[in-house]
Amino acid sequence: MRLAAILLVGAIAALLDTTIVNVAIRTIGRDLHAPLGVVQWVMTGYLLSYGMVIPLSGWALARFGGRATWLTALSVFLAASVAAGAAWNIGSLIAFRVVQGIGGGLLIPVLTTLLVQAAGGRPLGKLMATVSLPAVLVPILGPVAGGLIVSNLSWRWIFYVNVPICLAALVLAWRGMPPSRGTAPAPRLDVAGLALLSPAVALMLYGLAQVSGDGGFAHRGVLVPLAAGALLLASFIAWSLRRHRRVRPLIDLRLLRVRSFAGASGLMFISGLSMYGALFLLPLYYQQVRGASALAAGLLLAPQGIGALLPRTLAGKLTDRIGPRPVVLAGMAIAAAGTVPFALAGAHTSELLLSGGAGGPRRRADDGQHRPDGRRVHGTAA
Figure (spheres, rainbow, N blue to C red):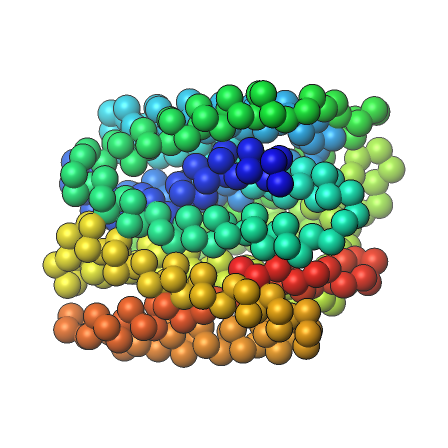
């Protein structure tokens, strides 16, 4: 648990930055004289690089070892946070957020891998339930922290708040993490896979971001990047499915042949899409449609964090008792019901109704999934 505590300090900063900026989007756009379509890349750029660097984590751990990878990722995140707080225009802010996402994207998978390795085959249920608590609460409660900062300080402190967290995490990791080395011989990086996957995701995301500005999907500015991204993605899939003797694929797509793994991965994608998409739109809805302050908007998002916390113990016990499928299906049904009030919301919809809908329990799709070898993984409440 000591290693888990050390790693969680650093992970909090990366998780917090996935949503803390949400309630400040309106303020940032006004201060930097940027329209909403451009300001959204402050978040999108972070999440894009955050996701794209995750496949590199396994190679980095094998090549450089856990301690060196962790300290490097923290240092990159810290430097980018300081630079983002000092950004002089919207372009520089987006660029620094992309760099920040590179550091943050390495932290979470490295944390998970190091904890699993440290467990040494022991049951992971209790440990992962503890570790996953910040992963659920911090991104959702981030808007509250962002609202407090925007209401009382400059929006730049949304990034400067990472400085003491990262410094503490660096000191703890330097003193408390055992030195480690990469494997010998270290695996070769799948450069071709990286060169195909990174621009594929970036182009598809860029095309989707142009839909509202270009008047729908039937526009060249949308269709061209979407088609180019889809072509690169198809090429990446074909490349990854080939049998490589020297280079391990960046992402082992053969794992998707395991039905439980494929189903859990798909549900996690849908869950992330619904959660993070809403966390971008809801602060704007509360501020622009209902006239709420940044702090009020953050507080109105807090019930989602409470709803995520309440079923943790019960969900874990039920998963171990009756299996993951009924628990996941029940969680999806409740989440869908909680979405209905927002789909029908207007300028005067009851805040109590919306808070009740946001507080519906969420269940991560990876809980209780099976390993590729067919053995069941203990469910962890999320």
